Length: 238
View 1 (cartoon, rainbow, N blue to C red):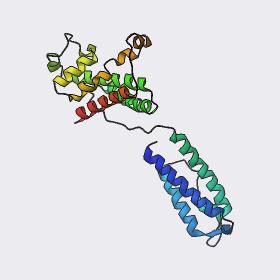
View 2 (cartoon, rainbow, N blue to C red; view 1 turned 135 degrees about the vertical axis):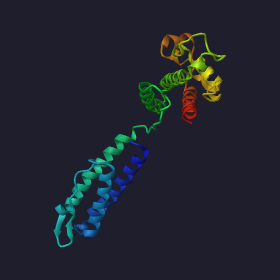
View 3 (cartoon, rainbow, N blue to C red; view 1 turned 180 degrees about the vertical axis):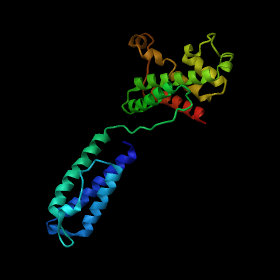
View 4 (tube, one colour; view 1 turned 180 degrees about the horizontal axis):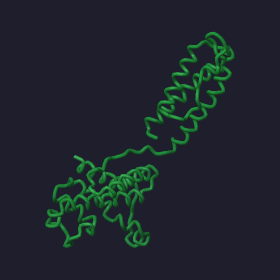
């Protein structure tokens, strides 16, 4: 659920809560049609934005006579409706709000789907302060994106001055991929300047390497890794 949807859900909750107080007033045991019409319109709006969330509402079930309606049934309905709204809010408030990004510049469709999936997971990991996960996932996404874009420009990449002496671009180190991509001006120099935080991301996968190489990481390294990914996205989307 998006932040806007959650905000709208809270607004509906407070709206129905306010109407519940009106119908629970002992002086309103029987009411005319206007407040019923207001409630009906609000429920229709909720059903339009959140289908199947609330139970069906038929004002005719509460009709008394002429233009009058009994409020006891309305109160019972509102108790159920408000409870459902409250559960929906509480369930979704613990869910991080993430954004989606278009990685259509990645030629391989399968790789693109993996990156889009991982980008969503990266955001959740960042919100949860799982810095190691952020760095590893960002590093993998950055390496995949750069390898893909350099393969699309392989004739230039293989003869670049900073290219390693290996014809298979997919086997280049992340540092090589970054250096060549910057040299060919496929991405901005900012990637190279910030990339030190993700160059050793593969070593983080194995705890032994992390200990032997005395690798340190935290929020700042995770933030920079995500920033590098965002710079790549900006450069390659334009």
